[in-house]
Amino acid sequence: MPRITVIGPHEARTIEQLERCVAAEDGAVGVLCADGHVGYSQPIGGAVGYRNHISPSGVGYDIGCGNKAVRTDLRAEDVVADIPRLMDEIVARISFGVGRRNDEPVEHPVLDAIAAADFAPQRQLLDLAAKQLGTVGAGNHYVDLFADEEGFVWIGVHFGSRGFGHKTASGFLALAQGLPFDGRAREGEMDSPPVLLAVDSDLGQAYVAAMTLAGAYAYAGRDVVVDRVLDILGAEAVLEVHNHHNFAWRERHGEDELWVVRKGCTPAFAGQLGFVGASMGEDAVILEGVDTPQSRTALRSTVHGAGRAMSRSKAAGKLRKRWVNNVRDDVTAYPSEAEALAAPGATKARKVLTRVGGAVDFAAVQRELREQRIELRGGAADEAPAAYKRLDEVLTHHEESVAVRHRLRPIGVAMAPADTFDPYKD
Image (cartoon, rainbow, N blue to C red; front, side):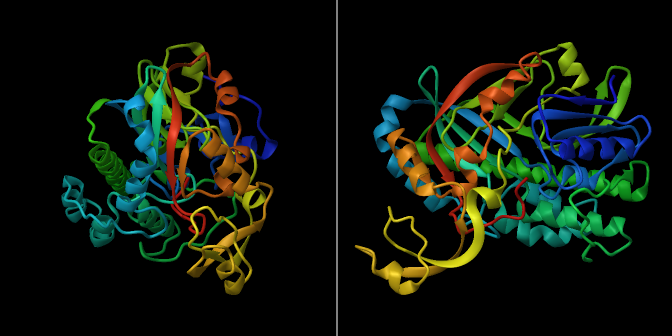
């Protein structure tokens, strides 16, 4: 197996990050998928197979971030006229954004597991986990409705383990520096070497247990959100596709048993289905892994999205304090409260953190989505289609290792409002 497999074109810095991670252990191997870009320590879109180590920095802060999609028994033609109301109800019943709590608390076995966690410090996070179970982050996290080529409605969601996973990851990065779990770890540079834990050490075993529990919490959260959307639609699921893409598994590749640390990298073993979203205005896909030489050298990996084409700050601009009003179609961020209230129909104004001077005209994006009959709730310029590569072009580099089984056309997109920013996104 090659030491490093690079799929598609990439900037040198992204490849150097993968090389640095692989060089940290003799015999390690790595892959960079076609949606890859620079991440913290390990590139997003990358997977590294270690023989004797696991990497908290590789899995990242949003442990268990992933996608779930379900095909429903509804026909798109029967609900298309009702999509605006349905999207309104989705954003009314599901909480989006930083630190948000679930307005409809749920009971779930994963909370019992956290209360009795093998890694004792996680038990102290039970209250946070209970309050956030079934909430969605910000950034590129979403709850979408789609129509497939046969006319059936799909639900697709993307998010991870919220504050529970973030505090778990932060705690282990602190422990790796000799600090207590609730200590403040020294943050390294983006191109820092990977943080590695020997799997057979007490700390390594504790991380495996804690990561696994955070992954179970992420799965549960996506299940809760999808079930709530099914209730809103009055529909039943007839097919489910569910994957993590920020996680580490013990996997066999050829004759080797490896801990494969995936960051923004979807597992795609032969016959395994995966849901991969594009940007807010483009088709998503259901992929199936196939057994080919490319698949084997790529550690059975594929993309988790289209991959960024420009940074968030370039797309959306720099953070500034601005004012917005309560007029639904007025997306302007005004420099003063008086100007926000002077707009026709405005009766209220509030101060927000927003971005100015970006390369993307988000008002134009919103108009284009309306013309495509895509109902958008929330979102911001940094998630606009122009900020991403084209998914179809990215997938051409993986056509030997995955097959497209369904194309999903977006009809409703729900994301956090533009004035929220999420530390848990991948």
